[in-house]
View 1: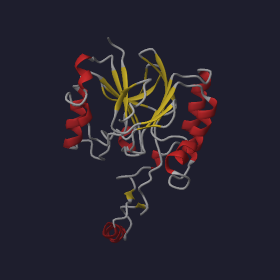
View 2 (view 1 turned 180 degrees about the vertical axis):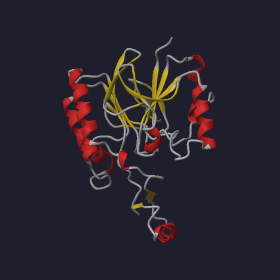
View 3 (view 1 turned 90 degrees about the horizontal axis):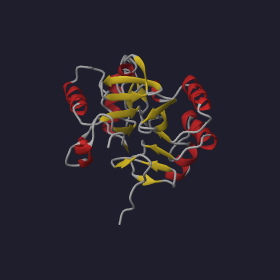
Length: 262
Protein backbone atom coordinates (compact mmCIF):
# COMPACT_ATOMS: atom_id res chain seq x y z
CA UNK A 1 0.00 0.00 0.00
CA UNK A 2 1.61 3.24 -1.16
CA UNK A 3 1.45 6.59 0.56
CA UNK A 4 2.84 5.65 3.96
CA UNK A 5 4.86 8.22 5.93
CA UNK A 6 7.38 7.60 8.69
CA UNK A 7 9.26 10.14 10.75
CA UNK A 8 12.59 10.08 12.60
CA UNK A 9 15.08 12.38 14.33
CA UNK A 10 18.56 13.76 13.66
CA UNK A 11 20.88 11.76 11.39
CA UNK A 12 24.02 13.94 11.27
CA UNK A 13 25.05 12.21 8.06
CA UNK A 14 24.81 8.71 9.58
CA UNK A 15 22.04 6.73 7.89
CA UNK A 16 22.56 3.21 9.28
CA UNK A 17 19.07 3.27 10.82
CA UNK A 18 17.74 2.95 7.26
CA UNK A 19 19.51 -0.34 6.61
CA UNK A 20 17.21 -3.20 5.67
CA UNK A 21 18.19 -4.95 8.90
CA UNK A 22 17.07 -2.05 11.10
CA UNK A 23 14.19 -0.71 8.99
CA UNK A 24 12.57 -3.82 7.59
CA UNK A 25 9.36 -2.11 6.52
CA UNK A 26 11.19 -0.69 3.49
CA UNK A 27 10.94 -4.09 1.81
CA UNK A 28 7.30 -3.28 1.04
CA UNK A 29 7.80 0.45 0.32
CA UNK A 30 8.15 2.35 -2.94
CA UNK A 31 8.95 5.93 -3.95
CA UNK A 32 5.38 6.99 -3.06
CA UNK A 33 6.22 6.14 0.57
CA UNK A 34 8.18 8.65 2.64
CA UNK A 35 10.56 8.97 5.58
CA UNK A 36 10.79 12.48 7.05
CA UNK A 37 13.89 13.50 9.03
CA UNK A 38 13.34 16.20 11.68
CA UNK A 39 16.46 18.23 10.89
CA UNK A 40 20.22 17.74 11.13
CA UNK A 41 20.01 15.58 8.01
CA UNK A 42 23.77 15.93 7.61
CA UNK A 43 23.80 14.78 4.02
CA UNK A 44 24.63 18.35 2.99
CA UNK A 45 27.18 19.26 5.63
CA UNK A 46 30.64 19.46 4.06
CA UNK A 47 31.54 22.68 2.28
CA UNK A 48 33.05 20.51 -0.45
CA UNK A 49 30.27 19.14 -2.67
CA UNK A 50 32.70 16.48 -3.89
CA UNK A 51 33.22 14.98 -0.44
CA UNK A 52 33.47 11.26 -1.17
CA UNK A 53 31.72 10.02 1.99
CA UNK A 54 28.83 12.42 1.53
CA UNK A 55 28.39 11.50 -2.15
CA UNK A 56 28.33 7.82 -1.22
CA UNK A 57 25.57 8.20 1.36
CA UNK A 58 23.43 10.46 -0.81
CA UNK A 59 23.60 7.86 -3.57
CA UNK A 60 22.86 5.12 -1.02
CA UNK A 61 19.72 6.94 0.13
CA UNK A 62 18.67 7.72 -3.44
CA UNK A 63 18.71 3.99 -4.17
CA UNK A 64 16.39 3.17 -1.28
CA UNK A 65 12.86 2.04 -2.08
CA UNK A 66 11.32 5.07 -0.32
CA UNK A 67 11.61 8.85 -0.75
CA UNK A 68 13.63 10.74 1.88
CA UNK A 69 12.30 14.12 3.03
CA UNK A 70 13.95 16.39 5.57
CA UNK A 71 13.72 19.77 7.24
CA UNK A 72 17.02 21.50 7.91
CA UNK A 73 18.54 21.60 11.36
CA UNK A 74 21.48 23.58 12.69
CA UNK A 75 24.04 21.10 11.32
CA UNK A 76 23.71 21.74 7.60
CA UNK A 77 25.90 23.66 5.16
CA UNK A 78 23.44 26.42 4.33
CA UNK A 79 25.67 27.81 1.60
CA UNK A 80 25.35 24.52 -0.26
CA UNK A 81 21.75 23.84 0.69
CA UNK A 82 20.63 27.23 -0.58
CA UNK A 83 22.59 26.80 -3.81
CA UNK A 84 19.99 24.31 -5.04
CA UNK A 85 17.19 25.82 -7.14
CA UNK A 86 13.87 26.33 -5.39
CA UNK A 87 11.06 24.19 -6.78
CA UNK A 88 7.41 23.78 -5.85
CA UNK A 89 6.52 20.23 -4.83
CA UNK A 90 3.21 19.06 -3.36
CA UNK A 91 2.16 22.63 -2.59
CA UNK A 92 5.32 23.97 -0.95
CA UNK A 93 8.86 25.13 -1.70
CA UNK A 94 11.65 22.54 -1.74
CA UNK A 95 15.25 21.93 -2.70
CA UNK A 96 15.62 18.66 -4.59
CA UNK A 97 18.99 17.24 -3.58
CA UNK A 98 18.30 14.17 -5.73
CA UNK A 99 15.11 12.98 -7.35
CA UNK A 100 14.01 11.23 -4.13
CA UNK A 101 15.94 13.23 -1.51
CA UNK A 102 14.02 16.45 -0.89
CA UNK A 103 14.56 19.35 1.50
CA UNK A 104 11.24 20.71 2.78
CA UNK A 105 11.79 24.44 3.22
CA UNK A 106 10.76 26.59 6.17
CA UNK A 107 7.23 27.84 6.64
CA UNK A 108 5.65 25.62 3.97
CA UNK A 109 2.45 23.58 3.98
CA UNK A 110 2.66 20.38 1.95
CA UNK A 111 0.05 17.85 0.90
CA UNK A 112 1.81 14.49 1.16
CA UNK A 113 -0.03 11.17 0.88
CA UNK A 114 -3.27 12.93 1.76
CA UNK A 115 -1.83 14.61 4.87
CA UNK A 116 -1.40 18.36 5.37
CA UNK A 117 2.07 18.93 6.84
CA UNK A 118 3.60 22.23 8.02
CA UNK A 119 7.41 22.32 8.03
CA UNK A 120 9.88 24.70 9.63
CA UNK A 121 13.54 23.73 9.97
CA UNK A 122 16.40 25.43 11.76
CA UNK A 123 17.48 25.86 15.37
CA UNK A 124 20.02 27.67 17.48
CA UNK A 125 23.16 25.63 18.22
CA UNK A 126 23.67 24.79 21.89
CA UNK A 127 27.22 23.41 21.64
CA UNK A 128 29.10 26.65 20.99
CA UNK A 129 30.32 27.70 24.43
CA UNK A 130 33.65 28.63 22.84
CA UNK A 131 31.96 30.95 20.39
CA UNK A 132 32.14 31.35 16.62
CA UNK A 133 35.67 31.61 15.24
CA UNK A 134 36.59 33.45 12.04
CA UNK A 135 39.04 31.56 9.83
CA UNK A 136 40.64 34.82 8.65
CA UNK A 137 41.28 36.02 12.20
CA UNK A 138 45.09 36.35 12.70
CA UNK A 139 44.62 34.65 16.09
CA UNK A 140 42.44 31.84 14.68
CA UNK A 141 44.94 29.00 15.17
CA UNK A 142 45.87 30.21 18.65
CA UNK A 143 42.21 30.44 19.73
CA UNK A 144 41.45 27.04 18.20
CA UNK A 145 44.34 25.34 20.01
CA UNK A 146 43.33 26.89 23.34
CA UNK A 147 39.72 25.75 22.98
CA UNK A 148 40.78 22.27 21.89
CA UNK A 149 43.08 21.95 24.90
CA UNK A 150 40.22 22.82 27.24
CA UNK A 151 37.75 20.72 25.23
CA UNK A 152 35.39 23.65 24.88
CA UNK A 153 33.08 23.28 21.86
CA UNK A 154 33.17 26.00 19.22
CA UNK A 155 32.26 26.54 15.57
CA UNK A 156 33.96 28.17 12.59
CA UNK A 157 31.95 30.66 10.55
CA UNK A 158 31.05 29.39 7.03
CA UNK A 159 32.76 26.08 7.80
CA UNK A 160 30.84 24.50 10.69
CA UNK A 161 28.37 27.30 11.51
CA UNK A 162 26.05 29.52 9.50
CA UNK A 163 23.87 32.36 10.77
CA UNK A 164 21.06 30.90 8.67
CA UNK A 165 20.65 28.12 11.23
CA UNK A 166 18.16 30.41 12.98
CA UNK A 167 14.99 31.51 11.19
CA UNK A 168 14.69 34.99 9.75
CA UNK A 169 11.75 37.34 10.24
CA UNK A 170 10.90 36.89 6.56
CA UNK A 171 10.67 33.10 6.96
CA UNK A 172 8.39 33.45 9.97
CA UNK A 173 6.17 35.92 8.10
CA UNK A 174 5.93 33.54 5.15
CA UNK A 175 5.00 30.73 7.53
CA UNK A 176 2.11 32.72 9.00
CA UNK A 177 0.91 33.72 5.53
CA UNK A 178 0.88 30.08 4.43
CA UNK A 179 -0.84 28.93 7.62
CA UNK A 180 -3.46 31.66 7.21
CA UNK A 181 -4.18 30.31 3.72
CA UNK A 182 -4.97 26.97 5.37
CA UNK A 183 -7.11 28.55 8.12
CA UNK A 184 -4.38 27.84 10.70
CA UNK A 185 -5.10 24.12 10.61
CA UNK A 186 -2.83 21.28 9.49
CA UNK A 187 -2.58 17.58 10.26
CA UNK A 188 1.07 17.50 11.34
CA UNK A 189 3.95 19.83 12.15
CA UNK A 190 7.58 18.87 11.49
CA UNK A 191 10.37 21.07 12.92
CA UNK A 192 13.91 20.70 14.24
CA UNK A 193 13.64 22.56 17.55
CA UNK A 194 10.49 23.14 19.59
CA UNK A 195 8.68 25.95 21.42
CA UNK A 196 10.28 27.84 24.30
CA UNK A 197 7.68 26.38 26.68
CA UNK A 198 8.53 22.80 25.70
CA UNK A 199 12.27 23.56 25.91
CA UNK A 200 11.74 24.66 29.52
CA UNK A 201 9.84 21.46 30.21
CA UNK A 202 12.55 19.29 28.64
CA UNK A 203 15.56 20.81 30.31
CA UNK A 204 14.32 22.85 33.21
CA UNK A 205 14.53 26.60 33.03
CA UNK A 206 18.02 27.75 32.10
CA UNK A 207 19.37 24.67 30.30
CA UNK A 208 18.08 25.78 26.89
CA UNK A 209 17.86 29.47 26.11
CA UNK A 210 14.80 30.73 24.24
CA UNK A 211 15.33 32.57 20.97
CA UNK A 212 13.17 34.21 18.34
CA UNK A 213 12.45 30.86 16.70
CA UNK A 214 11.42 28.96 19.84
CA UNK A 215 9.31 31.97 20.85
CA UNK A 216 7.73 31.89 17.38
CA UNK A 217 6.89 28.23 17.94
CA UNK A 218 5.06 29.25 21.12
CA UNK A 219 2.81 31.28 18.85
CA UNK A 220 2.35 28.36 16.44
CA UNK A 221 1.50 26.10 19.36
CA UNK A 222 -1.26 28.41 20.55
CA UNK A 223 -2.69 29.59 17.20
CA UNK A 224 -2.50 26.53 14.94
CA UNK A 225 -4.68 23.43 15.18
CA UNK A 226 -2.72 20.19 14.62
CA UNK A 227 -2.83 16.51 15.54
CA UNK A 228 0.84 15.86 16.23
CA UNK A 229 4.05 17.93 16.27
CA UNK A 230 7.32 16.04 15.71
CA UNK A 231 10.77 17.55 16.32
CA UNK A 232 14.40 16.54 16.91
CA UNK A 233 17.45 18.56 18.07
CA UNK A 234 17.50 17.48 21.75
CA UNK A 235 18.89 13.96 21.21
CA UNK A 236 16.17 12.00 23.00
CA UNK A 237 13.25 9.81 22.00
CA UNK A 238 10.42 11.01 24.22
CA UNK A 239 6.66 11.49 24.17
CA UNK A 240 6.39 15.04 25.49
CA UNK A 241 2.58 14.97 25.45
CA UNK A 242 -0.25 13.36 23.49
CA UNK A 243 0.44 15.83 20.65
CA UNK A 244 4.22 16.59 20.81
CA UNK A 245 6.86 13.92 20.15
CA UNK A 246 10.62 14.38 20.39
CA UNK A 247 12.55 12.03 18.11
CA UNK A 248 16.17 10.98 17.95
CA UNK A 249 16.98 7.47 16.63
CA UNK A 250 13.52 5.91 16.48
CA UNK A 251 11.49 5.66 13.27
CA UNK A 252 7.73 5.77 13.82
CA UNK A 253 4.64 6.15 11.61
CA UNK A 254 3.43 9.70 11.12
CA UNK A 255 0.48 10.13 13.44
CA UNK A 256 1.89 7.65 15.95
CA UNK A 257 3.80 7.98 19.20
CA UNK A 258 6.79 6.24 20.70
CA UNK A 259 6.13 2.89 22.33
CA UNK A 260 6.60 2.92 26.06
CA UNK A 261 9.73 1.06 27.14
CA UNK A 262 9.15 -1.88 29.49
